[in-house]
Length: 400
Image 1 (cartoon, helix red, strand yellow):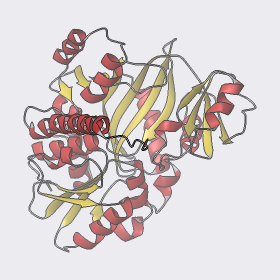
Image 2 (cartoon, rainbow, N blue to C red):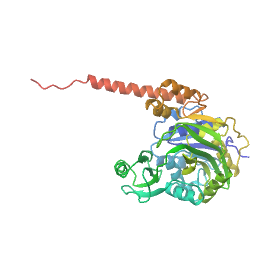
Image 3 (cartoon, rainbow, N blue to C red):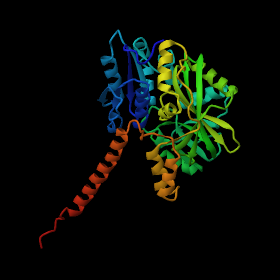
Image 4 (cartoon, rainbow, N blue to C red):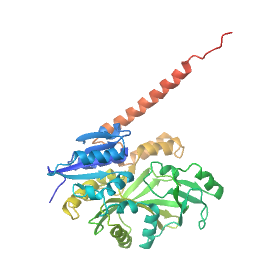
């Protein structure tokens, strides 16, 4: 059996999402692999300082990153496993599938451009409903157009996830006038409007699809402990999957239609009656990947070795802790303490103590967390100096 630690296997992470990339680095590192990281220019100080990295390269754009990958990883005696963490990077590799398929192992749908087509949210919703999943009522519109079949409130979503500002276009609109006002700030032209549903929770399923959907590995589900309407949760719990074989069968059928091979996340909204409504697929690594390693399920290792061998390789995988409480500590602090949804710092620290796995802090790899804290100090110091400099700046007075 081929292992990712074999000398002719090289893991390359092409990333542009700090915590997502850092989670992959740690998961591969804990599997005995020192990955190369091709980092698309950003706040690279956090993932760069991980002890597990072999080589770290910084590129300016996703296009430059893909070009660097093609030009620098071309040893015919080596097999390259490429892990990506953004929709744009996944789509770019998908659109170069014919060029890349013989040299690299990466998330794909067995045909150039096929995965990009199925990353469009309206396409996903239609496919989900065709295969027996429920979804919120939706309508595809161009910016400025009012819906004809939806009731207010509605939720605006960018139909494609390849733009940089797609999260900013998520807005709850209670009336027609609010929607027209929202259009003034929305950046994208094509939108998927959905009837807004007050949620009891959100549920995400974390899985791996092998051999174009013929093998489905779906061991983990996640829901939230901190949740606000229209916002992403930041404190969550991972469990062993327990939603039954019928749902799993529907998911596998969708993956077979897409012909997807790779890691994925499937998001549902749970309404007040407990019904699960399909939201979207993410065909990439997510920020939860390292928390699953902490559970005992190293998705990075399982996916890579399954692809290398053409079969599901889970002989070393077993859940060692379930439930597992996970926190995005930076965002959770911002959204709960600063916005007063938790009354004081003491309660937030109590939540920290209940948490098993963090996005930034890891006791086996502390340097990125320490660098993150130092970055915050430097930024506060910079702004303090800037403000003091402005206050001391002399004003010009006209001669009397």
